[in-house]
Length: 336
Image (cartoon, rainbow, N blue to C red; front, side):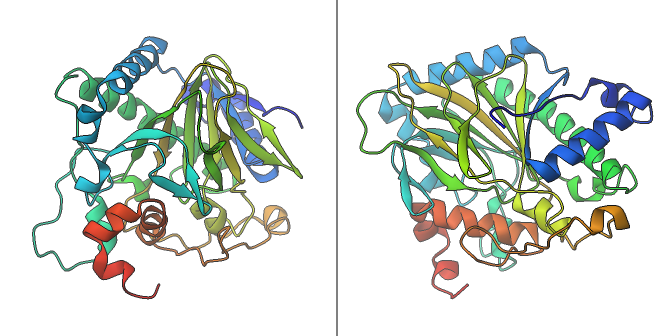
């Protein structure tokens, strides 16, 4: 396979019980079993909103570095804020990208909080004062992506022989996460935009524009995913793989730095459940269960926890040692 399947979600959004809606559910589920990645079209998200998001992203990355570093991710126990080029690590290597991490606007735990460490991942965003229109644009886009994520996870529920709302309870509230990312062109110390990995959550959506760079492991090859107008690249995370006993696939992927003279911009949206959510494997219909191959470890050979927040925090601490040292010294000092 040299390209990803293109799936039209519009019939499911219009009427999940229609023939078209049912066909989409089963096709999406089959693709997520075979490949773990697909282009999703027909989602109904306003292209003008997407254009505005890319425009404000360009404005953000054009700010002086001093303005961006005021929003340093190390300021935030919730891992919200700006990451300098080379300051994030994946698969043991340095990622050559900078980015702004976002989530829903939330209250951080009170000082002296003694509960699960992963609930420190809730908190407010950091926004550039120079761009007052950035917050409303990005938060509106995230609201629309939240709706798309719920539609896709419902379609997968139907395709897995479950009630359409089998996963709904995990998303009230949803602990969403988004990244506005730049992979700069030009001289660099590494070609690794992001190292080979698979995501830790349920569903991820990537909005690409212009320069390619995303590569998906299909068979024994890393295949470049060219940007497709009007489409989101959707893939599964380790929690969905574990929750279906390996029937659905969290496919390894990476991003390579742009080869031309233009920066690559992309938007990543992680449709995550509440951090407290516990995902035990669901009971699959016999015809699907026979095709499942339980896989409860990540690419590092570590157990995929059933509590979403535990998985999410583990990955964040590995990726951002500066945040770990400043806000989680009690956690990283404890054997995991």
